[in-house]
Amino acid sequence: MKQADFDIDTKGLVCPEPLMLVRNKVRDIKVGESIHILATDPSTRRDFTNYCRFMGHHLDESIENDGVFEYVITKGV
Image (cartoon, rainbow, N blue to C red; front, side, top):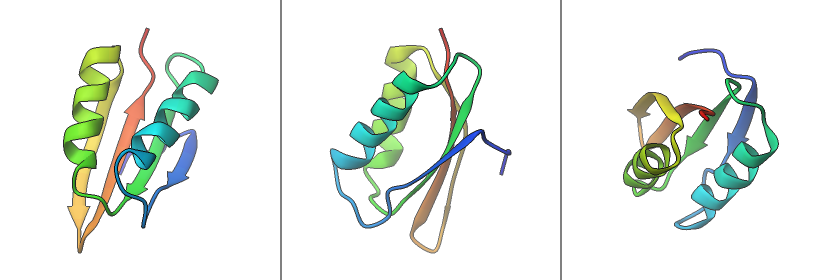
């Protein structure tokens, strides 16, 4: 997993809470900085992919291991 500037643990939370936490954090960081996210809600795969596509951010990594999803999102313009 790529080293990120910030970490967010959303394990145990369900839609829309993980996305809301990520959106709030992305607003606070600079373009080019990244966030490592841990989640257990499978809908985050769809939510984070669509969020990045619509908002111009980069979903650098997305993996799943034993029911834990890990993502790295880099803030775009």
